[in-house]
View 1 (cartoon, chains in turn purple, cyan):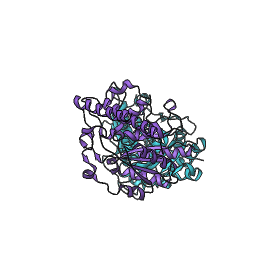
View 2 (view 1 turned 90 degrees about the horizontal axis):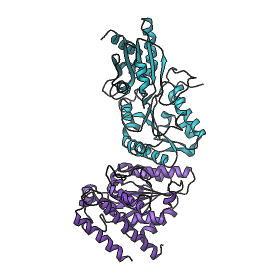
View 3 (view 1 turned 180 degrees about the horizontal axis):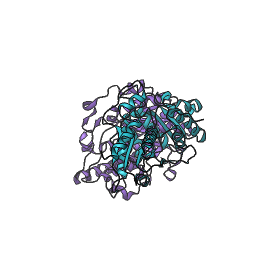
View 4 (view 1 turned 60 degrees about the vertical axis):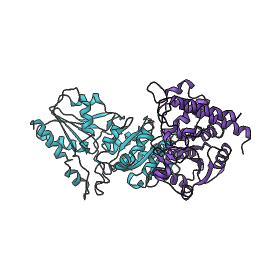
Length: 279
Length: 312
């Protein structure tokens, strides 16, 4: 179990990541705000606590890998890579522009990116391939694949789930960002996937369920995943879409939306206030 | 002694690569006997991955392996490797330009019995259109072996179109090979036939028949369809009175299209395509009969050349 000051540090970083997301998307530019913000604590816990990933040695073959299968929420990954110093802070305004460096979905030209994802359903398979290759190379590296809950309708996810169990890939951890909203509505209305934990369990996975905004719980789950042997672990993280921005929370309206100037200011103010409470 | 069977030559070559480089892996979707990747399995069980009948997952898994430093060879029938798993191949592999080798076996009509669902008439068109992809199609097992020897160093993804059957030996055994080479394998001054895969042997058959009629035919083996050596195509298309392209593939988007793309802005003799009309395949009792149904024969190549020379 992580110490309180360590938990507090990660919680503050999560606020910084959300602020970066808001700045990246800016005013009047459409961006995937909701599903980026729901990952604040998870991205912070992985990149700034759990993962063996040295930004100064980012191609080390034994580094842990972070794959964002729900590639449309890449602003949260960029936000982390900015804080790690891999993406220059001044590039933040260049998201989805011809002159900028930050593509709308993960691209290998961006330092720190591990795969091309975004055509939904492919990230877990890529993670399976990495974990198999790393096993061949006798590497201790772990692979983390973050999936969306809407994305789980893709059949390929379940093909990969079977393959990971078939090969007993205990170095692979799946994380489901269960924010319960997808592009056009709630997952319950659009394409409900009931008994999610049972499904993963039936596919041969070790299944954990956590509050995805509770850093302590997220870190504990990641620790448990890394000591579980003989099977991959999936962490079903209960999250809030648009977390930290009151008007964007729990709505599909900010799945991929633009902010007005007033909304932009309010979002940054709310995030700053949340961070102040963590001092 | 090289087997005339392309699948066997492929499987044996893959084993050689596996011995040479520990990064070579093989992925399979329950077609290991058809693709002959079983040879690799016997030799390197720890680097052979049975992925089940799940081609899409297999394709992205190969991407993950390549991202972690391996050189994966993915196996399926050509129609499934390029069609069923197209989006995975496009986004997981070709966008990041990964060194994954995609073995499309039972390509073209070579799986004659299984019919339209298992025969690939459009795989070259699909693979040619996707950026970063290299597309190769060996004319015989000698060329297959030489091609495979290039697979450790070739950057980016490669699609290898593999016929299921025995093919006559047509390429010179001692000639050096490199990916991207377009090779003249028969001299001639009246007609130029650009052919790929099994159609190279049919083109040579046509050339022999035409020679008896006093028509001299140049035969060019285009075993690398993409990137196409445009300079070579222009050079070999020059100075003849008729140009024929011949492929075991749809008339849309394959070798014929590639040759015509190469000849744009260049004056050239009249061109005709030999290939499969815009339709799916069909089951047949044997390969030769099926090839004949679609006019993929030496006789058809010769007849087309004659017609072009007569201005028809």
